[in-house]
Amino acid sequence: MNVYDSARMAEVLAPLGYTATETADDADMVILNTCHIREKAAEKVYSELGRLRQIKEKRAGGDHGRGMILAVAGCVAQAEGAEMLRRAPFLDMVFGPQTYHRLPEMVARASRGAGAVLDTDFPADAKFDALPKTELAEVDGEGRSAFLTVQEGCDKFCTFCVVPYTRGAEYSRPVDEVLAEARRLAAAGVREITLLGQNVNCYHGQRDGREIGLGELIALAAEIDGVERLRYTTSYPADMDAALIAAHRDVPALMPFLHLPVQSGSDRVLAAMNRRHDAEEYRRLVERLRAARPDLALSSDFIVGFPGETDADFRATMDLVAEVGFAQAYSFKYSPRPGTPAAAMDIQVEDTVKAARLAELQDLLNAQQIAFNDACVGTVMPVLLDRRGRYNGQLVGRSPYMQAVHVDAPEACFGEIVDLRIDAAHANSLSGGLVAGDARLRA
Image (tube, rainbow, N blue to C red):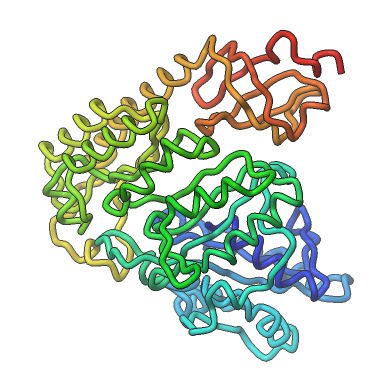
């Protein structure tokens, strides 16, 4: 979502003459687009601001003819706007994720030297239709894959999470608007689209007076010429309905890889997190998904050391991981986020205990990822080659399961979905070769 948001900011700034630069040293404006999910990520913002302050002051005292506008955007800005200006008074702009369409106005005010701009409202005009309609949204992999936001905000109020406070209430884009953007992306050469949302499978768009869910939206997007692959993220298990499960069975373009965060395997902890599912419901959901798409692989999120988590609770998480099996996963120690109910709980787990549990969980998750990658050796996979590798003649792509795949291949393969024979597996990637008989071998 932050990648997509950064692209929208770039689009808004383009009419003012701004284009991207590779380094902060020669930038007229630097915007840190932030995430507030974890404490460490928020603190990194202040560390980076210290470095950027030096560049800003150097430019102000140099012969560049103009200084640098320094800004912080996104969820940290939304949650800590006034405090951020107190800690970093050299900032020119601090603004939340619902205000990007007002960037030109903010830049004008900052350029006039009228003082720091703070904009962290949830204005009624901040939804998608207030943003500019461009020919291309954020495109990754040199134009072959793209993010397309279809839903924003969250109404679930998990006790550890700041998203409802920084992103606001759930909102779904109209169906025709989403499809129109998907067509523009496909016309620009995009082959793979990832549908985004803070809780994307609660999508409920309107079309012709009726409500359409994510499963039907995926089916409609798959009918667009040029769209060969579809993904979606991030999912909330309790909002995974029958139509979306059926899409995994019925829509070939929908990749067999799903990020489905469970957070914990303990029913007691899940209840304390205000998750609207228990561990058994998650297991049954996985069974239904794998029955619909037998080659489906899963990734998930896990939090260890949530307030009050006991050894038995942690063992329940380990049992669930061992039973379900994950191709990838993200796991973290619980960190209190200011203003969330969990931060006020008086049964916080010692950091040494959290660290030990995280290490044990990650050992198991890493072993599962390596085993999944190893099982791919000897298979033939369709891989979207959307990046150039470090070495001459090397291309890099993504498999249906989001693994990075390296291959020596001619330039004619770039941007194509190519069948590759997987020859070797590594901890975080695969390598392979073109299958015998591919005409591009002679290119």
